[in-house]
Length: 223
Image (cartoon, rainbow, N blue to C red; front, top):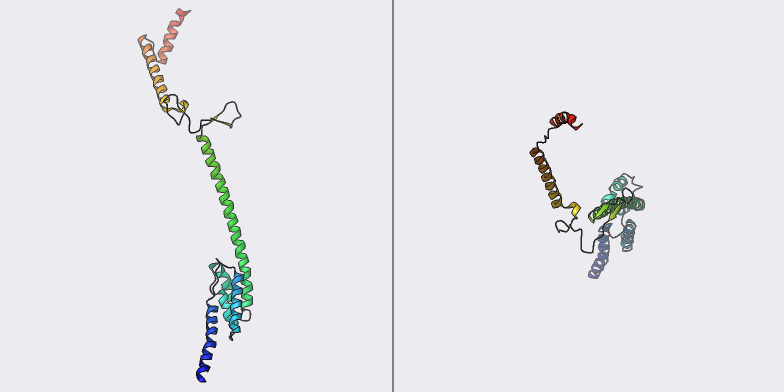
């Protein structure tokens, strides 16, 4: 008979022990549940333990609710620890947790809204700058026939860009050709050198003062 009593007592205590262990292993997971759901799980497990024949003290329930919270609740936990003993119960703690969770959600919503607005503003600005640069590189030139600030876009065949008639290369037109500008500068320099050589051959002075004197001396003969 004593053997059956001990066996019955062991079988009776085993589910109680498991329920108590499961109760104290409860932990709030903000990524999978809200604080309201966590409090409900604690309440359900407390009821399950009570139905097994053991009632968990009120202080332990309140401590369990705030024992493993995330960092956002640190300030609230410090405030709850300052409550009087008669005020520190799981109902009061649960109410404060729900209120704090609402404030945290509003704060995160405001931060996400500000971040979205900033990202949209920066993204719009970058998109405008990209379009502007692409527009400038696509052959856009000033059109004198239009109002100041307006542009005329040069159209090219698909797969083709601007083509230089001078150097027969793609990517620029003749007005922007470096070889053409270099040749024009050389021609201008050669013309200037040739002009100076002609003046020296005919005895024409390039000195300005000498030119004034010669003009003054020869002016009576011209009259």
